[in-house]
Length: 162
Image (cartoon, rainbow, N blue to C red; front, side, top):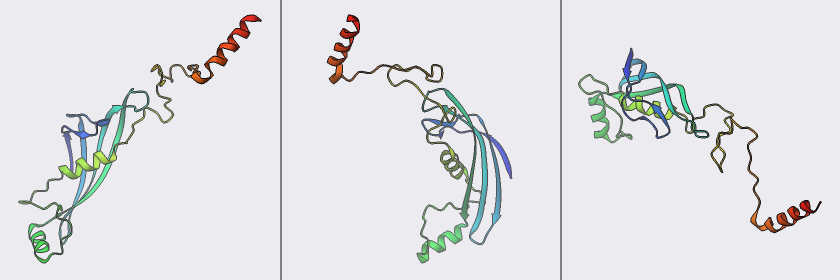
């Protein structure tokens, strides 16, 4: 089974995600097993966000896989009745319908990078003034420890005397 759909709202984190309405491709294999239906799938989309170092816009291709077992209602009820069910959150087949949206959302969010980068060697921004270091690699500030400021003044006076 394959399907293309528009991304729902909230498909991502605060830093990066698939924007609402962007195309998402889903390829899934549904297998009948003794307990229910086993769904194995792959989700492909393009995630957008900001580089965590320089704040430039980032677009990353995303491919996330998932596997979820949807149990038949009779099996779930029997497992609850005899106490052998250990996971009460196992999804069920309801009226021959599988709601794979939570599995897809989990796969996409877990497949996103925690700290997206525009490139692996992104130098980021200057911590003092915010200049993009990729544009000015030699950018630096001369920082003087206030405890040594008096000595700095002495050196400056000595330079003036020469």
